[in-house]
Image 1 (cartoon, helix red, strand yellow):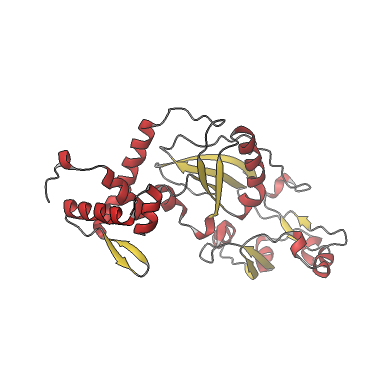
Image 2 (cartoon, helix red, strand yellow):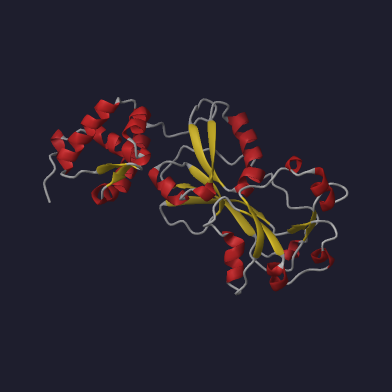
Amino acid sequence: MFAMNWGAFDLNLLIVFDAVMQERSVTRAGSRIGLSQPAMSHALNRLRHMLKDELFVRTPEGMVPTPRAEMLAQPLRNALSEMQLAFEPATFAPATSDRSFALAVNNYAAVVLAPPLVAAVSAAAPAVRLDLRPSGTLDVLERLDRGDLDLTLGNMESSGERFAMAPLLEDQFVMVMRRGHPASRGKPSAAAFAALPHLEISSSREDTGFIDRWLGEFGLERRVTLRAPYFPPRRSLSNPIWSRLSPAGSLRSSCATIRCSSASRHMIRRAYKRSWCGTAGWTAILPIAGCATSSCRS
């Protein structure tokens, strides 16, 4: 242990440290905070000398933090965020804000929530920019902790006290199949549902999704015969394939008898962040037509 001389400590070095920690590149970190590469290297050397640690090691994959840097990263990120909030206005003025908000969204949120969200933000905050990122390829909670994300939309488990969480809507499970599919003749059991060939929409092979986790509680596993990273638009399907789905060009939906909690869509953000968009327009999500409410229970 050593005694830090805080009177001689340059707090700007913490901004340099945080930028390198997030970017894992001295050049990109410098561009982010407006410093040249020589200035960044000089600042890092000063910080290394003061903390008696290498902090970052240059590798072909980028600047890799040392254990000491990993230990410092989150407390310093929190401290910098609190300092930023202390000097920002207490209220958020959407009409005049030109902030950029980074949102992690899954496929469902991108298809269902993004259009009304963009419309609401455009009306209330015309200069605000939205940066939507696929949540399946990210460690969302870690990115929220690091400040890379402002919020995320999707199916969320308990996120702990350090995050604020707000429900947006509840939706129902339905089965979607071609017209005339054998499963459309009746309501399948959970086992019959799992045995059917499934299309899985997932942007990450590691993320099996809440449906698979729920089926696993009953010792069941889906038979996934096709996996895709996103929902394909109708026009991307060839006419012969689309015509086989339905003569009218639409998919058939059927309510399953599977008893489950309805899928709850949430918005989650860092608890200490105050500047974020409101939820105007997000609740205008209608349930799927023709699906009996008894198919799922809340």
